[in-house]
Image (cartoon, rainbow, N blue to C red; front, side, top):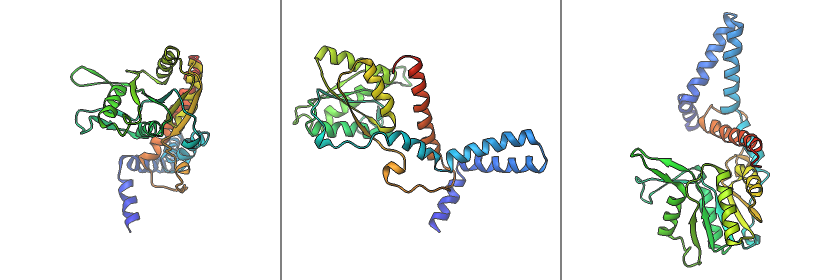
Length: 264
């Protein structure tokens, strides 16, 4: 009964309402033999079904994550720096820790875990730029750095220093800044921490930028197969499936754009 009620509630959410509306519209066009309109509404309903109700988004995302299985921290070599890409947090004056955790928050905690395990004395964090309503611009990397320095998590005792890359426009910008640091500091190896679905593009752009000895450390597995969850072939339309599809599409388009720009 609980599962049934939850399904009813899900169907009354925006994605479910749009799915039902398109289904009714498609049926009406079929009855009235409006073939062109039928193709339009039916195609939209079919696309929404594939991306919000069937498991294709999970399978597509898993196809990216499956290339990067979890790393055994015990066997990971000691590196000159641990680089955590942005996307996990952003500064927020409304939250007690002064940061807002996002879907990619695993990236930051994975980097902290590596540092606590003695894999590098340097933890470098990246991230984007966020405008505020009072006209300022705040940097994700600065907020994460300040939060880690305040809350510490045993980093000081482990002799780990935390550095910010400042405001970065994208992954390529983060790679270029890390490459410059590596040349200045004479680094020979870097542990790269980011979401597993983002690792293929990230590793390629860091290699192309000239960052030496990039060791991938994937995290933040999001698809059901990679999290050991069953994949059901029929689901009530929901926004989480659409989010997974959006993530996969972002990476697919990002690879094309990065290739065209010569970044990978």
